[in-house]
Length: 99
Image (cartoon, rainbow, N blue to C red; front, side, top):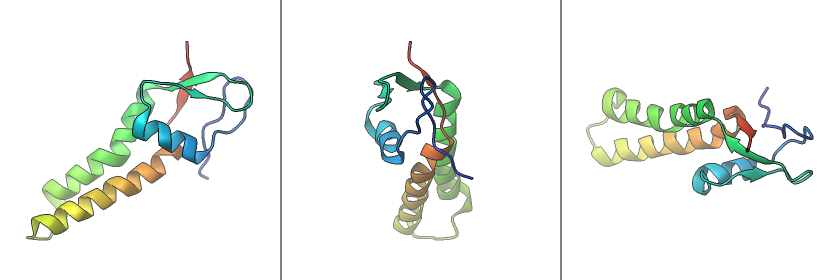
């Protein structure tokens, strides 16, 4: 039931890699549709979704749920949770048409 965002103009689906790359490096630029060239930017709720899938679970685990007494093991698992959340984020984040 995971569906990637589609272009609001031509309804063509964006690639997972294109959305993931946007999250890592290009927050201030827009994603352009390969089919029609329409620009899309992440919506404000989409930014919150990204944070709640990546940063919040890692911080909750590292600060409250960690059963380990070793800082490096806790940090490693927290980073792993952050990476897994970032891999899932392109399926849940929504974009809007750039103005």
